[in-house]
Image 1 (cartoon, helix red, strand yellow):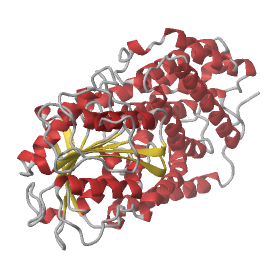
Image 2 (cartoon, helix red, strand yellow):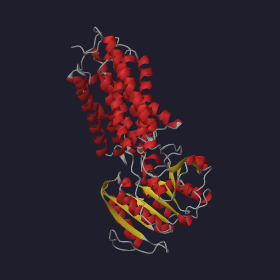
Image 3 (cartoon, helix red, strand yellow):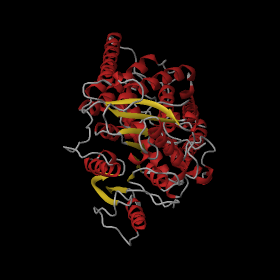
Image 4 (cartoon, helix red, strand yellow):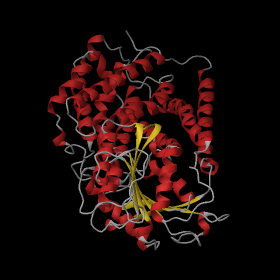
Amino acid sequence: MRCWQRLPAPGSVARSRMTATRAVAFISLMGLAWLTAGALRQGPPTGQQQLPLGLAGQVPATLYLQDAPGTAPAARPGLRRPAGAYAAGVVVAHGFAGDRHSMQGLCESLAAAGYSVLSLDLSGHGMNRNPLASPLAASDRLVPDIRAGVDFLAGTLGIDPRHIAVLGHSMGARATLDYGSSAGAGVAGLVMLAGSSELPGPRPPRNTLFLYAERDLPGVAEAIRRKAAALAGLVQVEEGRTYGDFSAGTALRVVQVAGVVHGTIISAPQAFSEVLDWLDRSTGFPARATAPTPIKPAPMERLLWLGLLATLPGLGLLLARLAPPSTAATTLPAWTDIALLPAALLLPLAFIRPDRAGLLLALSTADGVVTQLVMAGLLLSAGLLLAPRYRPALDGWAAALGIALAGWLVIALLAAPASEYFHGLGLTPGRTALALVSAAGLMPLALALQWLACRPQWWRGTLWRLALRIALLAGLVAGNAIGAFGFPGTIAALVLLLAPALLEPVLAGYYLRSRNLLVAATLDALVTGWLFALYLPVTG
């Protein structure tokens, strides 16, 4: 049985031109949205400046300053606070697998409330080229990053450390508490969002606020309550009650934020209200006539994700026009071919251990996951190559590589505005190399999956690809269940969920016009490798 291929038909040239025109129109509209997204953001303007600081200039940071009324950010030269503004600052530390972009909404809201806010890319994350030291649970390894941020606010902006607070989310919350209990930390207060630390420091931290989500990760609430009770010298603390005295630095409070999960607590209005009140009381901020509210993302920014998804099928049609025709017809896979996938996914788990993380890619938990996928791809390809029906899918790889690279770059460009408040998309040279190495290793599995999903109708092929991707997730869950990936192995599932969201709309449009599996597989491997390199911390 032959895999379906579209043949030229009368009028197909005109229809192809119309399809290309529509695809170009889609991309043009997306480009217009990309240019106007920033202008449509609601709320007071805040000046932003990108800064390398501390540790030989290798801690990238973004500085948020409140603008004077009617003054554009560019009109204020240098790194200076607005004239007459109260001198108070906040250093912000993101969570595991995040970066400073993921904290942007909260940072803008705090800056609009009058604070000078410095958001960091912690070691191993974002554009920070310093590796995240192992073990991952040792959050005290991030204390130098936070200290560099505090030193910058105190030294460059001239803010008294007694008017500086530190705020962290998840992993950043643990690092914040570690910094607050370290020698030489004289900041006004600490805010821990959905995180705590069991590492004792030489001094008690000052003015500590703990917030956790109603539906937080297992163990987070218990760890926070246990740590808060230890700091307060009590058997247990009453949530919602403020203990101690701010002027003495002994204030402490624990609050559950209703209706949110671990990742969304940073954007919850209740959390912002608690955070701002705590910062004001810790830093001595002047009394406010009205309580500030968090800046809400403009509706356009939410629509950008829908616009991105609407554009991607058009990109797939363009890639299909560029793809060379298949040099040989490809037969449909048999059930025996598909049955090889579970074995290929499970066998590598016997050779993967958490203590070997970093040997292949130095990408934290992704190292074990990518190792599993690479080995699965090699095993699956070895089994499929025994069947002559699979071999024609390997023809024409050189042209496929160039087309897929172009598609990857366009996807990254189109996704940039939609991900502004989610995660940065920039890659350091080291992460670029890791992305390409990951893609090369993932290529055998990507090609095998594209061939296994080959069906006469594009929609049936889409359903088959989704089913096979679910099988990949099941393999990851199995590895995590036996402890093959270590802490926190489930974070890699984010990539295996996000990759199809970007790829499947492209492939749906692509398979309408082309049956060249190499282009689709190469694009699949590039995008997945890029996302692994983008999100997972670098550990070496």
